[in-house]
Image 1 (tube, rainbow, N blue to C red):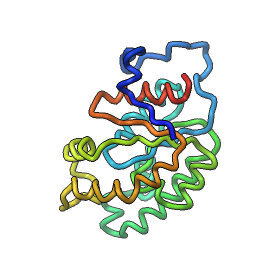
Image 2 (image 1 turned 135 degrees about the vertical axis):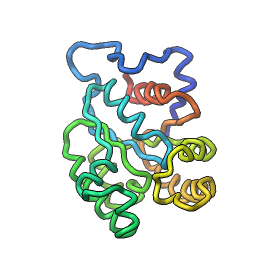
Image 3 (image 1 turned 60 degrees about the horizontal axis):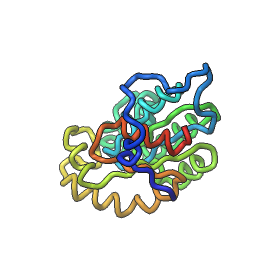
Image 4 (image 1 turned 135 degrees about the horizontal axis):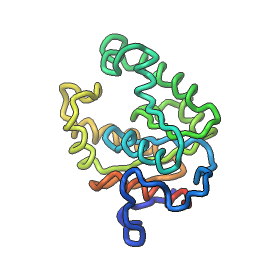
Length: 199
């Protein structure tokens, strides 16, 4: 599986200011492939990168967790606390299946979505999975800024992330594209994805 490094790309392509249109704008979206689904551990930047990528590709952006909250009428934390993780994962599976409807969009998923066998099979068959892979040190620094992640409540975030990476990274590695998410501006990661897409 190819690894695209944002740092390496910057040597020949300086960052485009946020919100700027793609270099080639002929009125047609620059990407004509399947829906793009961003996967990876919490803190990898899937939502932030996804929004910026969608802007560059002139495609809709959807955050799966937000869609789950809308469908359930409560926050992800509340779903976990009231009904448990298994219930949340079932709802997550159904929401992602609805989102992957054949139309072009960028979808940011929760860290556990791709681990579900049914969801993973659907993504690999009908979408383009892109793994945002970041070191645990980078992830731990990012997630400590927010106390809204149910799997980290009352726990050592670094220890949890180390264990999640051990269990999940081999599954994430099934994605056809892997992007290194460094401790750098998210725009760098966006540029690396564009390069991986040949844009």
